[in-house]
Length: 102
Image (tube, rainbow, N blue to C red):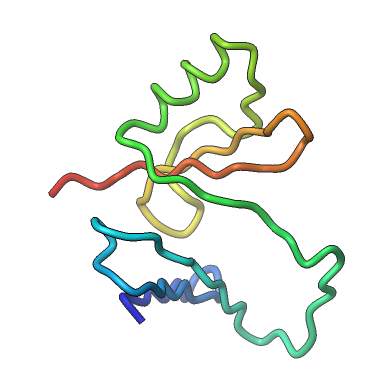
């Protein structure tokens, strides 16, 4: 476990796991929704996320190249991290997470 963030207002926890420091290797983000006894897995796929230096600029670049932005860059609902969502050519969601300074 590299780090854990609790979001009491949203009733969920994000756990970040990996083999190296987040700046050096791949990180898997797991979501635990509080007070949920059973999940409907469906296809068992949610979305992939990529860290970017500037989520707003990434959205502009993707849009300029004909891509589809489905959520503009802005703070996540229960926190301050800036995120955006775009769709790949097959309609799968890709989250863009703005890298925090430092």
